[in-house]
Length: 223
Image (cartoon, rainbow, N blue to C red):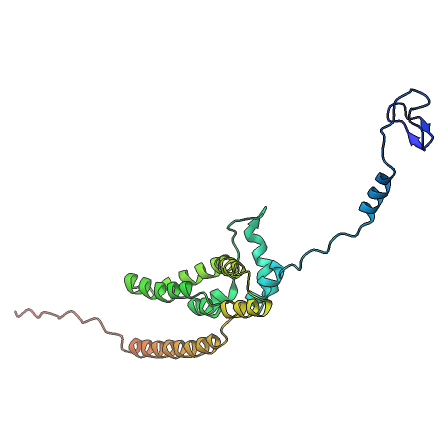
């Protein structure tokens, strides 16, 4: 049955005009319905094989604790645009900060946090300056690591001609961690604790030798 677009009257399939209002029906060739049906039923072409998803690339690049870092990274994006947000990274705070950056292969940041605390302590003469640097590292490490991952992954994705095996090798080389840094940190902590113990011991020894205030000489008056 044909439905008239104007008055909504049902008409015979071969009708050329509407039986109620006389509106002419558009002429279509018999092949048209078949072609439309074939077009609707034709299977869609399979999409080209897509590269590894960004989520997979980020996981491969981060390596250990990828889920925890990806959860933190959600704070640094709003409507697809990067944004700064406060977060906290305990390893970067408790661990010697420059070693954490070195552990995550962030060499420039590692250099900054290796030289910065020493230079600040030398200039100010205040040993507590190192604590300020540790707090800075704890508060910004996740954000800095987010940008490090983002930039490095973007560079690897630019090399789109890499096959999956080469891409995975590039992700592991640029990302992941350097396990040996953990042992370096343990050695440095042992040295630092030994030095602190020695300083305390020397301080106690010096404290035993408390200088006494000289007594005021008593003058004698001869009569």
